Image (cartoon, rainbow, N blue to C red; front, side, top):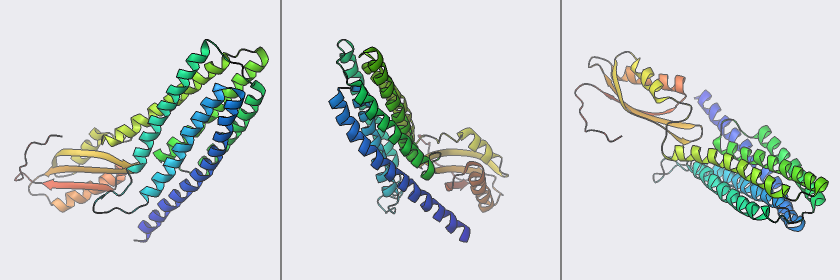
Length: 303
């Protein structure tokens, strides 16, 4: 019991840390968002505005990630037997969609500016973008220090937003510098489009991942054929069917299957072997396994 209890504490500790990291990053981001948005209006820079648009998507992604963590901590109920873990994935999906919309707006505006680039106050623009860059790097550092950037898709999507943002600020600084040196005001829409493409790349990744999870896709880290092979290698197993592996939320995978065994085998022994195998080899703790002998018949399954 003791060891299990300990690991549970560790998970909560991780969640608390993720929460702290996200809150600090959110506060930094909202401050800079306002600065860049009004800065963009005053200096007439689309690159700054696009960066603040990026920041807005950042802030919403950080806020959503926080809400998701808070929701995930709510207990499961008879009505929602998995609790609210999936909310994290819906949050990531929503994040991806907002990023697409923001990028679309930026590209639309940039294309219009191409033919008639307005004058931009490049000095102030560079100053504001530099503050933005510093803030982003600070947020990224906080998330790296506190959060679980590697394993939690939710914290990871927030982190990617922040990093993409830092690139946006670098772009805005570069655009400001070019305009300040050469008065090439077309640099502003060009850099804005580059930032928008960066946003799209990140958004596509997040969307693909969350839709895969919502479609009950097999977790990216697991090969279903490998699982089948491993189960069939257990002594006494004749066949494995109706095998499903899916993700509830990042770091929480589930598996269910039917295992056909030789009639004389001890079904509990085979079951125990299967549970161990899946825990050890594939790190899935949530398994539902139906053991069948040759007498069992069921109808054709659709999936």
